[in-house]
Image 1 (cartoon, rainbow, N blue to C red):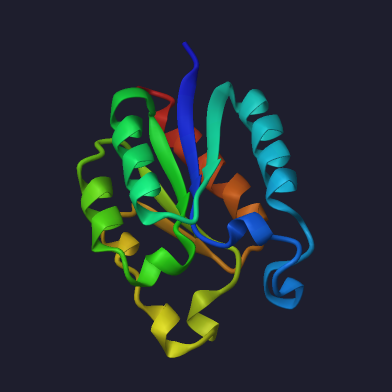
Image 2: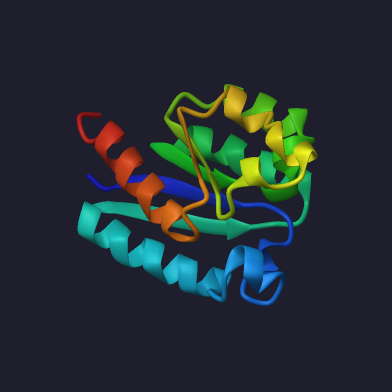
Length: 147
């Protein structure tokens, strides 16, 4: 049976490759989605790759994941530092959650050092560029292999 992993992306990630390439690189979100889909096939899992600039939409997708996903990879972007609603939704999800950040948030502005999502995340990957998504997929695939 194929395991489904939700890969959720927060605000402004639709501008990946265009916005601050010196921080986030030149890859687009479509490039990341393709890389995730390719790796997922190799790992024997499926991905549902989604992006929204709206907090409530992300919360709704986390609720949907409760019914269909083995795990969640989430790059909440700016909502990392502000969203108790996303934290509460993730707390209602039983599977593994891995928080991903393309940049090393701990080397950036002080307000980026606090993450509500980290209070629920089973792991946090930061500063590995878009490869962090692939690392997160590998980890969730290994965590859910026995399940």
